[in-house]
Image (cartoon, rainbow, N blue to C red; front, side, top):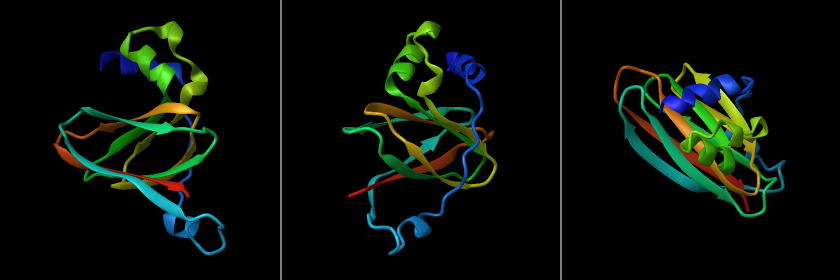
Length: 142
């Protein structure tokens, strides 16, 4: 998508710290993580995979893991900015709706993000010259 380049220039690049899922699911934590999304998709070179997740309450922390054979990018944005991006509406894009964005040079990334109420979108970008199988897993608390 050519308009995606515009939003990458629109945001301030954030730094996300990797989080080990094993430590989050330890007995020390009162709530256990439950996998609610486990999906894989073959992604051609330099193409994005967009996947919606919906939070009924908002404010909850989503733990996610993305796996790929080659370098990739992870961006998570709120629904209103995603829809504005599809309409090529720069005025409808809001900086605070960019929940995370990062380039991953390895093959697996695990992170956490606080979701707003409603729709949010994962934008997973294959940054290699090869077709890869990307795997997205999302975990919430019960």
